[in-house]
Image 1 (cartoon, rainbow over the protein chains, first blue to last red):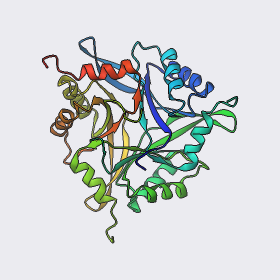
Image 2 (tube, each protein chain N blue to C red):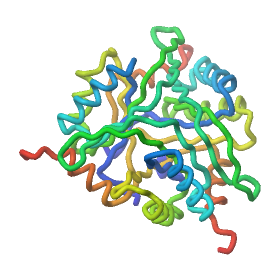
Image 3 (cartoon, chains in turn purple, cyan, yellow):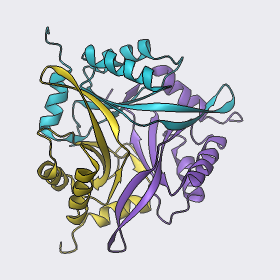
Image 4 (cartoon, each protein chain N blue to C red):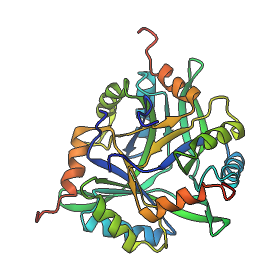
Length: 112
Length: 112
Length: 112
């Protein structure tokens, strides 16, 4: 189990439901991800330009693979309205084999 | 810290509150987990049989150990209504020692 | 990617919005974290003193670094109303370089 799996759980936060839905569509249609969960709005508090700021944000939990991660990061960066969006990828150490295989298959381009 | 801890954070998504509560009860009563957080419903979008599908889902965040993970995965697979449920385990690199010990103790069967 | 990044995603759960906001303020003002997302209330179920208990809780997702984690854990333990609070740190395997640098910069004390 220590070597982990090929799957990554990627987190990002969007400013509203419209941008969250747009980003979800982009990353799925390009096969950069297999699945996106849009959580209800959260209250974010963070340092920005020397002050503590507050904003409502929509968190997305995105399931992809190590192989597809570079394409996902690029797609998120292009589609995201923020200057420095949160894009962080958490490793998956273990999981249901059929689910892990499904993530890998859905992020593989049909033409490859 | 690089070696990580014995604790795992496991994510799964259920189709509704009833199945989420049932799964929570099963994994706790069997000592396959120490704690389950049922998040509010999320909007899931994913590839399935060649089409992009949408569903409302209830995410569960489950705290267990590497040692109890195989029993947890088996219990989730049996209790879960989906054909290929999301079951992914994220490693815990560090944590409050008393909390980590509590997770380990609560997932140890009294009879063992 | 296997070596991971310096960033950690830390999870904790507070009993209500007031304590969640207080903890958020403490960890940001002390520069023990760069960003905190307060999720909507979840339903927690867990073993405690031999019985399965239920509670509503407010999850926080806290972004920090390995270097700042010890200060964060100490601040959380002091500010948290629970006897054994959940404090778990998940590693970040990859991420947007500008975001990872931002987390590192915001958790570095100006006086250091």
